[in-house]
Image (cartoon, rainbow, N blue to C red; front, side, top):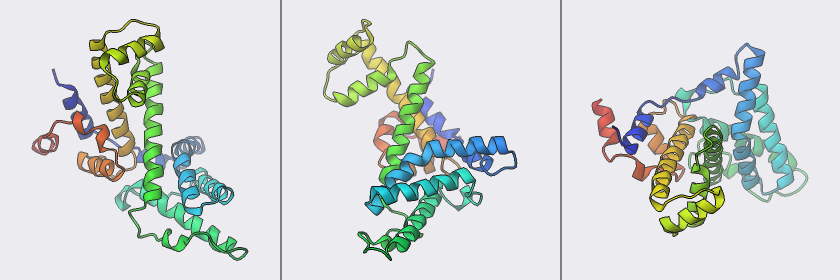
Length: 253
């Protein structure tokens, strides 16, 4: 029977992406395209808003630019997005930054700029801390939402509560976590059961996070996923859940 790390490794090996959502957002069927565009907005609007606020340093203007970018997603203006041209987050970032730059250039005629948008909005910049931070948080938020949705279909699961308890009390012992979980769920639980459930919950969270990260990558291969996790500072969520030789076994398979 495969271990949890083997299961997660297999998940990486068979990963597919959701570039199909981007394609559906620009197809002929109005209903299907509309649903796909709405999905893109739901997935990425928080990252867009957080990023624009960070670079414009003005909530009012940031909301205006972010709304324009969201309208573009809803209007299907990303028909040229192609996984062969790079990660979806990079394509979206360049578009949003250019919109922020253009907006600021127009507004700057009326008052001096508080930030040099030209240094931020260059299309060739790939290491953008503001965008990485907003995308990282967006990925984590979507992963938590996916785990909560999964838990609603499994009434006996306490994965979300247990992971949040561990995050809130990182130094708590298994006995202490068991007491806190029992208080939350109104059900008795042993420290050993807590350790097992926590391990399964972490593996499931890692699987969902990997799925989320792979969505915007060209192939979602283990190499690409690992690179993206590292770029976003998310490797700690999966590192000790992967077998040390998972890449080698994939190459040999």
